[in-house]
Image (cartoon, rainbow, N blue to C red; front, side, top):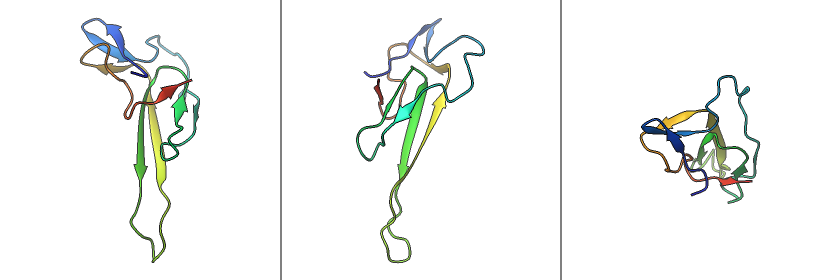
Length: 90
């Protein structure tokens, strides 16, 4: 598990839980999901998606990627993967 949540009461949480930990983005991300080298620093929750259109006016369209970062994201349980898909931490 690359980014497990930590216990917070009866739940799990990803990332810093202190107020005003900083402005997002907190993590530094590098690489791409398509290139299989996407990685991030810190433990904030990262959600990453890739969109690929089949064709654009007869030409192949390259994939576009987007990610979001959430500070103090709560989960039902501790010790579960906080990222989707799992992101390597550097």
